[in-house]
Length: 451
Image 1 (cartoon, rainbow, N blue to C red):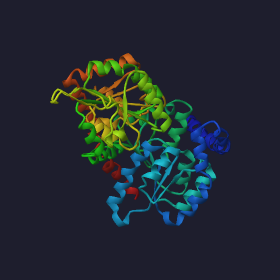
Image 2: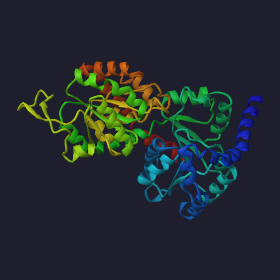
Image 3: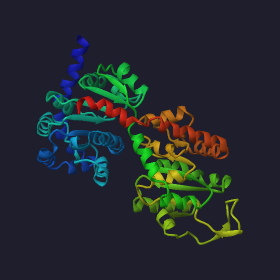
């Protein structure tokens, strides 16, 4: 009894402090660009959401944090629409982060996409009362207590789908553990990605609500994008170059500091190798800075857009690195291809042979499933706690942590120097993704009793 009182107390404390935190949030806006963007996007938000109520009555409400969670939410909404047809409810997506909101504006899939209001009890009660959703689905782990409490008080079932809980999550430690255990006990059902996630929710967090392994719905989107990339202009052009490709995907400056010092040696030992460098934010200043850094290390670069347009760099001729090529010297494309557009990663990986995924020296590794479905062994830095699948790749000897330039060079040389190891690691990586196939159908089975 004493423990349950403690658990309830943490939730009460949160409810008391949430309005204060919402009022203080604008103070961080001048210093944190994402907070500033979120504050700007939330101007007039509650009025917009309330005005949309007539067309959203009885909706399926899906809440996601950012881009990755939105990609997990898309198959969930699609499964409901496919199953119910004309009887399907309206679908509303709310997004917490500016990046998730902006991505959804470019790739809409619902009757409404907008920000979620800050987690103030009165605002959440007004919104739930206006929308009267049939079902509220939270994706992965972006769970806001006052939203959940408002929904439950109104009799709205709440589900977690594609749920994940890192073994190092602060939510497993006091006082967050008490708050989240009390909160998740108010959910109707939790669908989680893996058996390890289920164990952490049940044994680690102490959740007593039903918990089922439904899988990672993002894998459905990854598989679909891979299949749609077949015969794409980018992948076909890269394949036509011959040789092999190391794809450095979604990189930040710390990732580039890992690889730029060793690219020359890597190319010296594998002259047939080209490097496709895809910065996470390919803005003109970033691209210009990367070109200058590469040139400083004696590495020529061509932008992907120029390559697709048939341009070359240097116009020089050298002996072909492709043993199958005939005719002696011929013009060659620069050894580094700098990606200056977005939305082409699936095609880059389809043409690749080995991949490194960025983000794992900052907030956490980006999407490792996209190269994995393309049969690429996947390298990344040390921060992979945010991605359960990265740990699975490591366990299956399909993913490899590299912490410094010598380690990156050694791992790449080992894989590129052994065709059998490269092939086996790539096949194991693909199986990690395919094992999640059917996650949308399993998630639908959890939702059906509440639709």
